Length: 387
Image 1: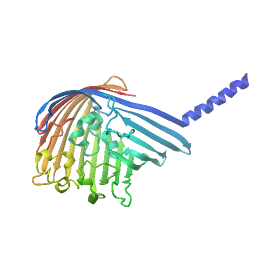
Image 2: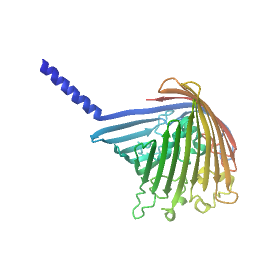
Image 3: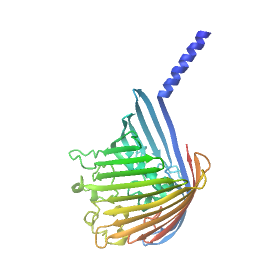
Image 4: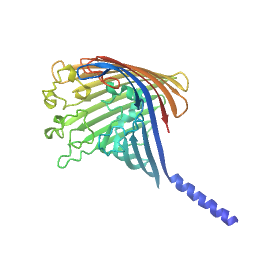
């Protein structure tokens, strides 16, 4: 009897050790809200009207993911992360083109981690996504995407065919390098991308820097926001399509977190010659953020905790855009206000209101474009659950 109990105890110890050495976690977010928007475009001639709807991913994109780690010994671990997005309002996969087989579009990586840091291969975001925790993206998420954070990559743009290295935390400093292969035979630079980032955490202070560059190509590791056939023509493959810089900072003053950031984006292929005379950039109705030569995005904001569960939120995001052609300048300004109440550690209720105004360029709209109207207001009330 004693021998049997001893054998069971030994087997139990081995089973526990094996379980501790390898683990797989299933996680996800379901975020959905009721959204009202004023002055949404109704036709090509400039008509607008109010719009009500159910939007998935108001703050964070709804998703389900799998991540795992295996202890290889000697402080070395194998890691992986697969993550797909979906629209909770209709159950469809998020961001999928008809016929696409891109299942794990949010993240698909495998690699090694240890005292040296982490090396990952696959489809992944660059370090702009990491340092966005010090910006309005942490509180408002997609609400501030259209005014500039989609353009400057703080919303989390993915890089295909990439390898990244992230250092271990060194006295508060963490660095990152990423390289995306263009995978074009005979022309290494076509579709190529690369970036470098750095962040510093020290108590209430958080700082971040990031740079990212991508080049035009038919199988680009990162798709340029300038998505015209002319811009990725054979003559332009290998030429720089996108360059972005991010500088962010955040400080916790007691119950209030205050933050500020600046980003600059340059798209050298965004010229009238590439886009064509049929759509001159000098015309205001063709001045979109995707067609900017250069854009500067500025932001100031705060998150004030009235209680451990309740936050009041506010941010002002301003974009100055420069376009090809005569007098090619425009502005976008969005004021965002909101509140976030946590019912538990995993479930919160939120309410946001935002007003966006445009001058001498197309208004992106908070969610949907208001055509040629220079201002729009959006209200969102929703629930987010994390598991």
